[in-house]
Image (cartoon, rainbow, N blue to C red; front, side, top):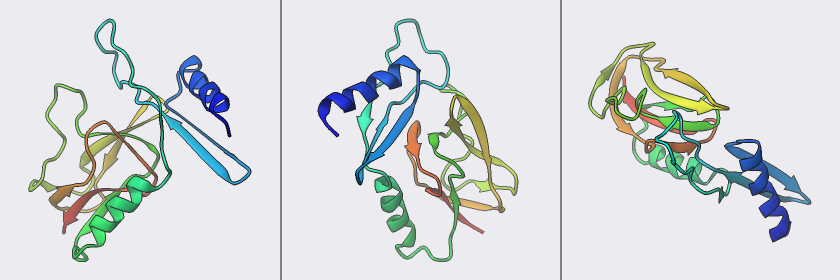
Length: 150
């Protein structure tokens, strides 16, 4: 894959207002991702630039952190690929914070996928020990989002 082809993929992201595009050819995989604002921003807001990302890098880092002596903790994982949001809107407080108790079925975050906001619920009751993902960051399927103490 050459630079011209990568630029064409970046143009497709913009042209079709996509947040991510991935292509694999001859054993080489390229993924371009750009953060698209969840809600309309102020006039003149500019979307962030597209970036080339290595698949699974963030997942591996979070998984390593999860495995480091936290075996008794439960993990809330991303059920899809998308953009992680801690709050329902930029000016609202987060759904949960470190140290807070959550109930089974309580919304803990939102993952935006294909312009749809998906509320992610806790499958267990417990206390949030750690939020593993920064707000407005891309997440992969199965990536740990929160550590819960049951």
